[in-house]
Structures are given as C-alpha cells and as structure tokens.
Length: 219
Image 1: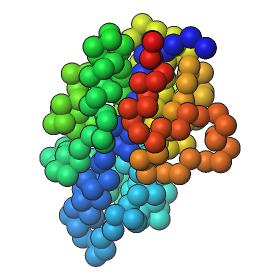
Image 2: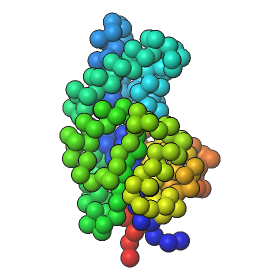
Image 3: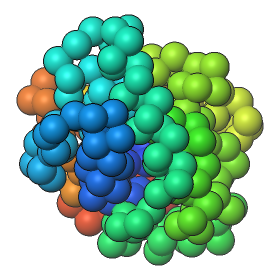
Image 4: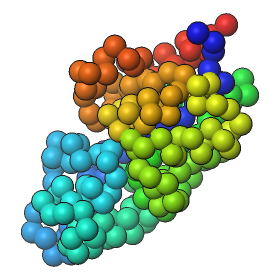
C-alpha cells in the first residue's frame, strides 16, 4: 500500500482530552436553565462524539428537536465559547505528531461534531489552529459524521484524494465516516471515550500511543 499524503483528525477524544470541559460546560448549561442535577465524568463520557445537540437530547431524554433539547444545546454552545479549554489539553504525543507531519509538508485537517464557535476557540487556545489546512463542524453546512461530507471537503481543500488520506478518531462515527469516504487508512485511538465496535476490529488500525501514527509515513 502506498504511503498516505494527508491526515484528518477528530477533535475531542482524539487530539484533545476534552471530557473535563464537556462535563463542566454541560453542567454549567444545566444549571443556567434551572435543572437540579449535574453529571459526573463517567456519566458524561458516553455522550461525547455525537455532537452537542445529541448530548443535550441524551442528557434530557428528549427528542433532538424538542424545545428543551434545543435550549440546552444553545446554552451549552454559548458557554463552551467562553470556557473552551479550562481543563482540556492535547493528549500525549499529539504535538509531536503534528510537528512531524508539518515538518514533512503533510497537510492536516480536523472534522468534529463540536459546535463551530467552540471548535474555533478550542483550537486557538490550545495552539492547534496553525497546523490545520481546514477545520469543520456540522454548523459549517455539512452533514455530521458518519456521513463522509466533511472529510471529502477537507480532502478537496488539502488537494488530495480520500484514498490518499488517513482518518483518525475515537468513536464509531469517526470510523464509519472514514470508511464511507474510502480513506487510505482508518485509525482508532485507544485513549478516546468510546470502545471500538467489534465489527471494526479487523478493518481499523489501533493506536495505543499517538506517535504510532508516524509509522504510516516512515521511510
């Protein structure tokens, strides 16, 4: 197999350990709307990866388009913009990989379910924006993962084909999007927030240490 020419990364659970911020901001949003419960870290984890609106729906146990769901979603997005990375930071090895890929002239992009305004703040605060040719959220006008739309647009901007691009994520949404886009390789980060579905075991590259990604481009 030929070596890849570009990389696309998920954000939360892949590049950044955002769970503490997601929990804190969800709890701030719940409190601001008068709810009398708060979520623990373990209670928050299953809701990461599907987007803020789905998180709000799951937390409240109401449909995605329910007015209460939408109110929590908007409160969460607004609060996240003000508290993008109080606790979060890149996972070990992430900066080494990004630096190496940049040094080798290999373009990178980010596709995430995080609300666009929160994504911008997180990437800026953590110093990740400068590495990326493009970063996209569904609010930018694209279907959410597992649809391949955001990945295909990133490939277009980076000037590469999906078949030349590695998709790196930590949820089934990321993995399914990578397969749907027909990426060169689809990698699963073990440090993320969801277990790898059994049906994908033989089709993905497991990454226990983020720097293992560099093996895909080693001479």
